[in-house]
Amino acid sequence: MSATSHQHNRRRRTYALVATAATLATAGALAAALPATASAGESSQKHGGGHHISRYQDVQLLSFNDLHGNLEPPAGSSGRVTELQADGTTKTIDAGGVEYLATHLRQAREGEKYSITAAGGDMVGASPLISGLFHDEPTIEALNKLDLDVTSVGNHEFDEGAKELARLQNGGCHPTAGCYTDKKFKGADFPYLAANVLSEKSGKPILAPYWVWKKKDVKIGFIGVTLEDTPGVVSAEGVKGLKFKDEVETINKYARVLQRQGVKSIVALIHEGGQPASGSYNYNCDAPGAGDGISGPIADIAKNITPSVDALVTGHTHAAYVCTIPDPSGKPRMVTSAASFGRLYTDTTLTYDRFTGDISRTAVKSANRVVTRDVPKAPDMTELISKWNTLAAPIGNRAIGYISADIPSAGTESPLGDLIADAQLAYGKELDPETDLALMNPGGIRAPLTYAAKGSEGDGVVTYAEGFTVQPFSNTLNLQDLTGAQLIQVLKEQVSGTNAASPKILQISSGLTYTLDLTKSGADRVVTDSIKLNGAAIDPAATYRVAMNNFLAGGGDGFTTLGQGTNDLVGTDDLTVLEKYLTANSSPANPIAPPAANRITVVK
Image (cartoon, rainbow, N blue to C red; front, side, top):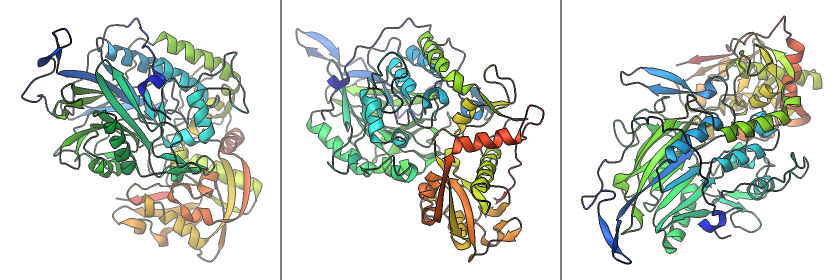
């Protein structure tokens, strides 16, 4: 498949824009100065009939990642960012929503003759009802209106498999749900890049591996990859028939391909990321030294990608950072991520050298900008949201439960995690009265439940749409038998093996308790003697009936022991399980209170 710019060549639409908002201070500059020979717009050369053109051309790169279909402003902490102040204090800012993202991006493009908008994957998947109910067609429509130029695939682009991803790219009505409106779904008018996702049959990428942006004599190539471990974080059905290759090897391979085509300016879009040293989006990632403020997979990836790649746009961890990490030659290179859910976008200036056809890296500068909600809403996005909300309303507005206060989803053990695990235990006991406990993966809980009314439903009312936002995957609730020894091993796998560096702490049902000692390392962080069920120590030789979703039952998230369970029984989908529990255990007069989140004792 040819991967050049003419595939998705479209004229950028003209918008009536409001005045540009004041910009934040630029952070993460590699260096203020251009090479001593010239600064942007100064050095020139004779061209054609004798007129002069500038040697250096600034190209604006606007980027974001991990939107996850959040067209409306996300609820609770999912819709806020933390900003570091000059005096060292922090403040939180409400952020996100495509009505505001569109306005911010359009304002940022004003006066920029050379502007590209790119994304780092997970544009869809794990989406709120307004998008997820319609297999994310609304999000693709919104991204088209945002004038997104290119994105890499992320792991969530494979939630419904490669065929559905191809439909999102190419258009057409859903094979079972059909068409949602009287207009046929046109698909994305930007390319999804999947350089390291190969068909097992053909051995070739399932989508374009790269794409070249061209304007006049300026050419910039983009290579898109998702994390190699995508099969470990997506259901087996979603990645059936696919192979996922190493990120570094793949990017280096296609960088050589682009260079042979005469494209020397290259940006990698990588759906893999790191953990920042600060929760503030504007912290100094290069203090005390280049890249010292970030850890995790992206740090090693960045250090090994060929120096011919000029910048890395990353994602997956939902974190915010603007770092310079040395490439294999020791030269600093920009690595960015814009948190998630459309709360931030990254504004990067790439200075293109017409003499060499490459980016002058000493001039690259970048900063994350907040998608504040104090700008006018983009009318076309308001119209889009209204259209899809009208279609979703008969399903989404139905009350399924009542809560007395916010039920947060953040933390090692979260109140919402406890609630969901309790709901799964209750349903498990309906399927089989011998069910002992339930385990829930933290990544499957996508948002908190908030007390304040989102629409006209009233405070404390949990609607189906809100439940869908919390659990959008349509996983089934499964039962399986594990020995006590296996159960202990599962808990240790939270902090060992593939989860050693970035623990995945399962949310647990009432009755299961243990101590997590973070002063220790590896599997020892789960204190074996502390693991108890209803006050009794786990018997390694006994059999326990465990409820979990099918993702965990297949060994997902590095829990290989869960893939070894026996006597499987498959139940209904997890959202129905949550709905049944809320309906049975709450009413307007007796709402559910947030669980105490005191089942795991954490020692720090």
